[in-house]
Image (cartoon, rainbow, N blue to C red; front, side, top):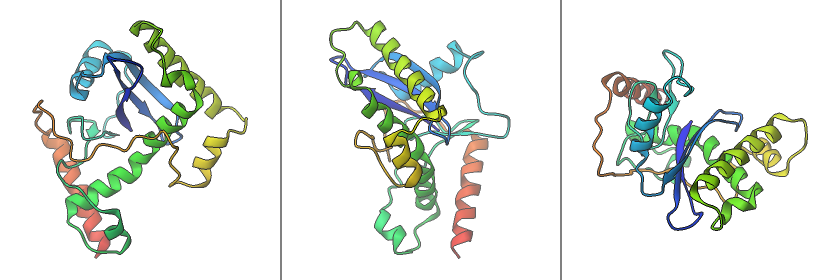
Length: 210
């Protein structure tokens, strides 16, 4: 799962891009961009600048990405402009395929939302780094993510990780909701292959509801 998060470290803010696995471990982090930088710009730059180091998805696989990213080869984004209401899903009311897909996408995407929440709660320095220059702030962000992974991979008990493990719906206080229906001034067309993949998944989800 890939998403961006704006760090309220000062004015200007920082926009970071992170990838995590379903074990809540961060597998990639790009920090140091101004908060005004669009997710798509950071994404495109990363794939070019760190092409040999970025953990690209395997052939035939893909990352789930939020609506700030393009729906392109290896990166599966939700449908834009298809908001859904959780209570209606819980009542079993049949929505359309696009809304059903977005609901499933968001449900799986909660793992990175919770990962960010645990990470931000654990390291108070992330809440206020005004005394440090931007370059040092970026290094602090990366270091805290490395420590997050060390704790996750250790055998030590951790309160927030334990809560997440016991309840898949638990959301730490500092979690940021995944964007839905995001509209940007950067127009990026959907990749034909991933568009077809998304439609096939959406159709399959609707068949499962019948």
